[in-house]
Image (cartoon, rainbow over all chains, first blue to last red; front, side):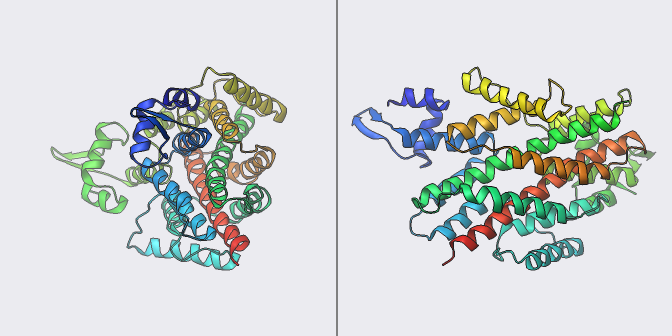
Length: 206
Length: 206
């Protein structure tokens, strides 16, 4: 298909498609004339993935580039690639040099050890969770992580991991993992806010 | 305390504090001299709340202003205020004029009816969930919402709603609801990504 059709089908404007081509986020089409290239379903799929990560996942273009680089890097074993793609999904968090921070980070590290979770020392999720705990403590919010650990564990091990095609091509597995993490995460967050509205209405309407 | 101490305790730079004061996001201190004002614990708490919503919740300053306006508006009944504050937490989503969109939106509306959830027609979460479903369908991802509904329902009704002090002052209830929604949401999302990493490692490491 021509770039105009690719744009119509994906809902991504032509100048934006050209930007993704220049940035290497989208692979080049097949050149059929000096100023004409032909695109196929793989281009459409990649554009839909970028759009979902931008709109639904609210990732930055820089993070999406990291994710795509991980999907495409064939030199790494699948497990490593999943890790790299995953880490690109985590927001950057600057650890603070305070006693509060060290205490929260120790709580996170101890939790991971107790759960027996297989998470690298460098995983950015460790500092991300520590930051949230510091902010909650400063605001006097109570922190019982157990029900959240249980909900996350169940959704991931009983639902989400089964949707990843481990036996197929490596890039399909990585793509499924990234999209699943982002899109199911948004589903869960939206449903939580819906449940909040409904429960508040019930408890407060006279 | 002076503004310098307020800055040190909150971790928010003085020019940023002055910006929040000008924008009405932070209430004025008590003027003790022409160029000197005295601040107290209520100012510190408000700054910590803003910081948590910015850093952990990744809300925009415009959204935070809406949330604060809802917290402070004493003319509305609590249930309405909770709704307004809640809606400010939802990202803006433009409905698309497509058959795909209408089908997803119908699915969302039917789900809410089936669950018997008390959610207004105007709730932005309806379009937010519809958007995610459209993107998932375009990418060929399967959608079984049931386990997510169940996880959201349990966390909200069994854990999160019990932390809101309905009997105290109205602004305390609204603040607790907003912070709980944002901070516990981040806790859950981070733990899900941790569980993903751990499960991937287990299933893929030789």
